[in-house]
Length: 377
Image (cartoon, rainbow, N blue to C red; front, side):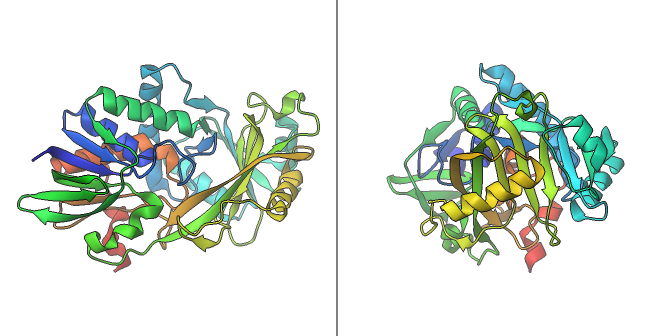
């Protein structure tokens, strides 16, 4: 056997898994079709949100708490800052999915938080202008991760611990080979005992090896950065303005805003994109798309969207229920990890730890049953 574990895809989840495996003493080989961190998948965009009062479901809270611990460890190993705490506001109708879900997680897991009406939000955060009927849940530990730095740090940790990482080498598939797996790539093949697949939006390309159709949809998502009309105004800065999620529509979708960081004030609608593939996606953000985002930003942060600074396309890989996928295929030799349905980056080191424990020991501290492939029939 050439290696104990092969990792397919070295974005957030793959780099975290390779690091955790190598640090556990496993012989690890990892592959990525590009050179991460890159801007072609789901792991880029200057900043990403990390939050604890998880409106999607309370089951994620223990996972994100472990992620906070591991992000701290990874940051301490290097010189780059990976996490900036700003606090986080979840705002919208008191009966909406966002506020009700965040409050349920905060209550069940005793997460420190404040409940604010619209007037209190405006008073505490002058950059914000919520609708008069909105309320907000302010959690204290939320903040921003810097994704490109995070992936670089995890890849460095993996290599330092002994992982062999191959970039610009695409995995074509795998086949059972005696007691192991033969991984076929664009440059050759290798024998591994088990495989962890963290291929994100390219996972569906591997369905022939998986042996079944996967219930995944790739979605084109946009991030926008705007220069404020008064960029020197301190109200835009992270010390004065938290990250925020705003439930601005009746269908439960949210609009995310960040304080001024890097190119500008970042924003984007969550789950508002068109179905696509990594090969066919349009990576050009149109003027109309920028204008629509700027209009939403001006509604909640007046003066923030004076001009466009930057726009980017990224890819969500969605399951039907928008929860994660962590499960075995190929007779328990291949572990599918993620797809994260657009809300996974913050969990990366914790998911990497879980994937490493499962692939090495067939057990882990997290109950992964809610993320099984079998839930889709």
